[in-house]
Length: 495
Image (cartoon, rainbow, N blue to C red):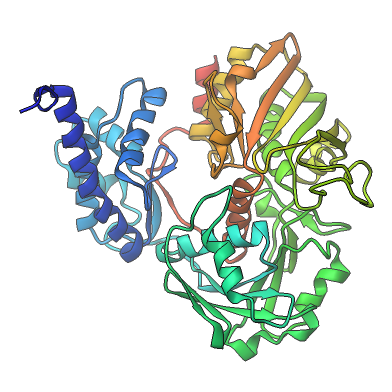
């Protein structure tokens, strides 16, 4: 027998692998049978590998000071799978830590107390809403990522049903469109199965039948002819950005609301989920999800303004190139954008700084902004150069934003990294709106500079889906409930 097999560290690793392997089908059953979305200190446990689960357990050490083990979480997951639970988002890591710190030896009694709102199917807040048909109008970078996310969430009670995709043309290209969904040079292969039904213009994506409708403008489509009704149309073409243009979708049979994946013009509400999504009223039929940059910077700016006050500042965006630019030098109606995206840094404009005021009105007129397009295909950075109303330190800013990323109402919007070795490719696939780079934070007196990474494709798409859920009245309890409000805990930690 090899020396490695006698190594207690290696044996412990193998034992933990076995525990994680046992956990995976239990997590899957909770997800598909009970619509329980599990996480570990905010990191999703759904459809994760054994190694990913073990790595996420190690991540807890950065928060609690001690590493959480699958020995701690497996009993929690086992017992949860035995209980009749109503749909909810449950942080298994926080439950396991709370159980370790309690004097309770009975896992079931502990869970019945901590999950009382959902045990035995109890659902006092009617959290799950009704199923909602979703149509993607356009199937480009954002459209295909939205399709991936919607299909991924279809088994876990999101109630958003991707029913159709509208594209231009006359048909006959379904195999090519399926191939683009299967394979992505940035985000990797699709996690699942795609079957092409050319005769019915349909893709069967992980069991979800998605009809492809060919039309050159919205007026050509009657969605009820495809069994689609009361649907939300997600327009990711960018062709129309005002009420008049987007109202074309509302004139179609079977459409109830429209969500634009670009900044809206005029009086269209620009929504950054986690910040002003509660401004969406039942009467609002056209909503904008703002831009990827606005989604990245608004949560951090909101957090800083709440605690320190923002007097004024400048936002410089270092942005990945997009399809709007030319691959090689050629005519472009925009300034500088005609130069090769793959060979140049291109200075251009961004409306994100001004758009901040639509989500956080108290910041109106306080920010300027510019953008530099750089030769990478995905993941961007926003540099926030701010003059605050109170003195600050780099450590103080980082401690505050770290707590906001872990225990606030914006924990799905703000992520936090404290490593001197990270680079842009490390954030491909990150589901947060933005990631604070703690090692880069600078502060002196009332001046502060913060660096915020963001996956301008996938992270933004996750924000779009969150708005879709809110527009569909899909709301889940988040458990365990905090015994102390996050704002009070942060104030205590900062004092």
